[in-house]
Amino acid sequence: QYTDARADKPSIGYAGSPGHRRDFKYLAYTLTKLARKYVVRFMGYTPDGIKTELLGSAKLHEYPEKLSGAFSVGLAPLIRDSFSDCKSNIKWMEYSMSGIATIAEDFGPYRCIKHGEDGYLANRDWETLIENLMQDESERERIVRNAQERIRREYSIENTVHNWANLL
Image (cartoon, rainbow, N blue to C red):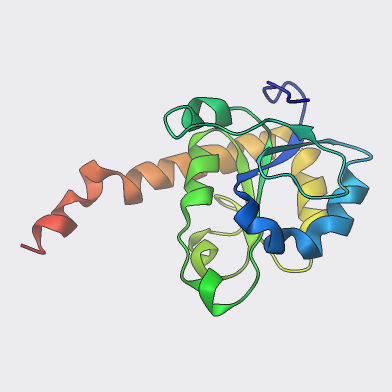
């Protein structure tokens, strides 16, 4: 049963493919525990054994609208290995531009996040960080606002096109 929910109440979520299954192995216990207290929503991939609301999947052109407001706190775990170190920070940007506060692995592509300013970087403190954001709506809003401003400033085509021009 798929839910077409928006973040009507604070919720924890993830959007991504089944290829991220390995990234969730060490978060399974924490999410199972938090799912007793909070709504947990997954889009695309659903981990085994965790009580979740399924948001289904989305075609590429539907993804931004479907992600927008789908949950309040977005998770971006990564296994710390050389493959993950080569990934991009796109999940932080997608979540942030969709109004979702990000908690990401303190590793590789997510080290661009300014901890406590435009997202949170997790080590072994996932549960604490999730709890704090779930209980503080103004903090979630502040994190999202800061992230959106930074993404527009540092990653938008209007502000980075000169880098491409310099390559010619």
